[in-house]
Length: 64
Image (cartoon, rainbow, N blue to C red; front, side, top):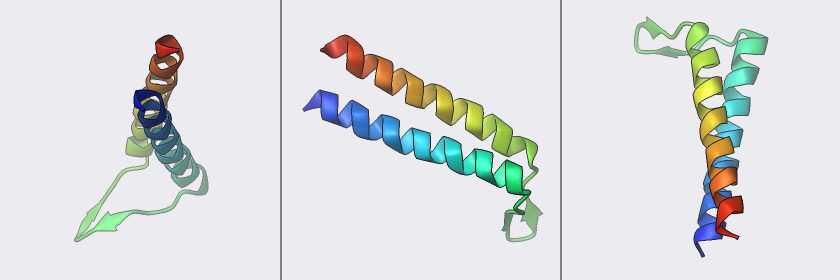
């Protein structure tokens, strides 16, 4: 059961990482209230979410 949970978490983090990369590539503006989120934050989000995805996949592999 834990292997499935790690796999699902890895897939979710991977989707989030891809979403951040697409936002940066297409220069999509993200505004909440009056605050405009900088594009650089998407690069940070891509790296963090990507590393978390890799971590989940590696943890799943080490449990087998």
